[in-house]
Structures are given as C-alpha cells and as structure tokens.
Length: 449
Image 1 (cartoon, helix red, strand yellow):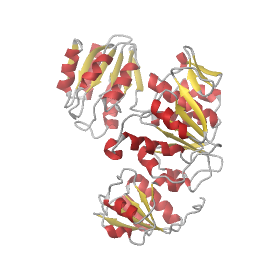
Image 2: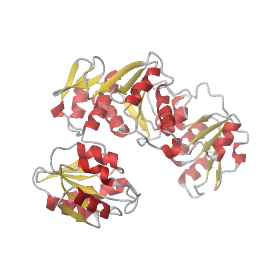
Image 3: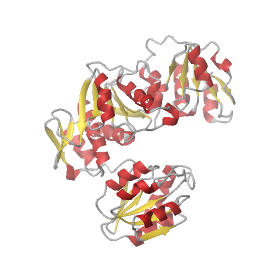
Image 4: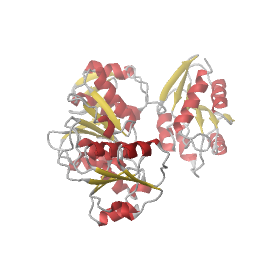
C-alpha cells in the first residue's frame, strides 16, 4: 500500500463509525496517524469497535463531547452527518479541515478514477461501466456508495487497475483535492433537501466532482439536463455530452435504430436488454465513460445484450408462461414509479403500496394508461385502491402479503403482460428495507414456476 502523499495531519478525529468510518480509521492508523473515533450510537460490543480498539485507536462512545476535538488537526466525517452537527460547527469555528472518507482514500493512489454521480441511476451506471471494462479485459475495481468502501479497496489496487466510484452529494461535499480522471454527472433533481437545505446547495455539492479536474481529464454529462448544462460552463476538463433527444457530433447519442459514441454505431437499440428511457441515459453515460477508459465495442455490446439491471432497480426477474416479472422495489417514491411505468408499452399489472408519508398519488394517473390491474398492500393500500378507481382500472385487489400480491397479479395477467413491483412508497411499514421487500417478491415469483 502507498503512503499518504502530502498529508500533514498527525491527529485525526473520525466522526461516525459505520462502514466508511471504520475503514478510514483503520487505514489512517496503518499510516501511523493518531486516530480518535467518536460515535454516539455504537456500543462496546460492536465488532467494529473491538477491532479498532485492538489497533490502538481511541474510541469515545455514547455522546459527542466537544473535547473530542482537543489536539485534533483534521476531522473525517461520516457522509451522513450534517454540517450543522455540533462537533462539525465547532470544528469549523476552530478552522479545522473537514474531509469525507473518499478524500483520504484518493490520496493513497495514482490510479485513474472514474467518479459517477447524479440524483438517479448512479448504481446502474457504475455497475455498467465496471462490467463494460471487465468484459473488455481492462483491469478495474469498484467502490464508493455501491458497496465496498473506497478506503478498503485502494489498499488492494494494483498499478494497472482503474477505480470506479459511485459518489453521493454527501461524499462530494467533503472533498478538497479529490480528482477523478473521468467525472460523470447523470441528472439533477431536487433531493436530500433536508440535508442540503436548498437545491442550489445540492447542485454545488454535486459539482465538486469536477472542481479539481484539468484539461487532461473528462467530464461526461447529460446534455438534456438544463441544470447540468448550466453547471458545465464552469468545467475545465474535456466535455463529453450524451443525449437521448438529439444527435451529437461528440459523445453518446441515439437515433431510431442505433446507439452511437461520436460517429460510431455501437449497438442496435433493439439488442439492449435493459428497459426504460432513463436507463438509456444511464447506458449512454456508461458507454462514454467506458470508451474513454479503454473499453472495447465488443465488451460494451456483451454487457448491453446481457445486463438485466441492478437488483431491486427495475430488475428483470423471470419469464413465466410468457409473463415478464420486474422487481423495482427501490422505487420508494412516485418519480421512480413513473419512470418504471414509462418503460413499458405492454400491459402492466402493478404491485404497489407501503409506508404512508401523506403523499397524494394522483400525479400517477397519467402514467397508468397501460396498467390493467393494481394489487396493493401496506399502509397506503386504500389510497392506491381509490387511485385505481379514479383511473378507471377495474381489476383491483388489496392484499396483506407479498406472496398473496404476486399470486393475485398472476391471476390478473395474460400472456405478454408485465408484472411489475414498483411500490412508490418506502418499505418500513412491513419490511426493514426495500431490499428485503424485493427479495420477498423474487421468492414469491419463484414459487410460480
């Protein structure tokens, strides 16, 4: 493992454990940095706490006393901790720099980084880029918001491997010198305003992904997104746009038949397995980033003719008796369900419902034209039953379990139909996570075989 370059800090506070805090604390200790960890919610019995104590790291649990900042030169903050946290406010008043974990990780490597951000589609695009490069025999590892912590992955990178990072606005707020060779911005919608307070603050955080780039680097961006186009005026790197609405002389684009990179036809649209116009944007972004990073057309085509989606994100599950089952459990709001419904021209049986956050679902009605039946569950089941009535959908069932929902949906279906789980609600009324809800759907589908 490389040594931290130009790293003047010898006493560091890691605020918040979880995966990233644990990983960066351990990494810093291996670099002979004195590390203090502060976490309010962790307990002495947590395995992370035990392992870090065994490495000689000071850990303060149960509260956030101001004295955790004594003798500290740098704070490494868990991305989810807001900047109005008492410790962060005090650290800023003391003039202490505040990083997130990816800033530390990036200082350990010289490898090219592909950083991917956006309001929606980050995981799908990150996965596509990674698989396109792997299929092209380009050495690569993936980390960030997608699963593995960057601070762990950089310790195992070989000299020839590139690093693909899925990056959230929370992570990007805490960078100072972090610089991806290829920065990708997919889209910008209002999100996480409880954290960022304003949309302008949110956009500013996202734009940190390109702030340190130079003319030797690349910025892959959505030419159809007015917010990104405006932000791109400040980019110093080489711009590589993509669009699903118009042909481009440079970048990624489509016509009625093909997907292109620059003037080169890469693949017929009809050969792409992943459905949905939003996924076509993700695909174009991934093709641009992968081509810049050494992927071959054959490698890209192999992925696009086999990749069926990230689990729980409009994931194709199974075809049973000519019915197509899709798991979109990650659709925890109306916008996500709208995008899912727009992805299909075939008749749809929609499985929906979940945690009641007081949402008015009437805005979904224009997107229910192809929906022939609704099967609903959870706290919002009565709202969706009423919605079906307002949309003149005759086949409606209220059920109590996912297994019952899947079997009822099958009863409503005919050959050629799509059976789609896209709840438009969070899962917490019945399931601990959207992943668990999606897994239950997949298990229930498998019982139909």
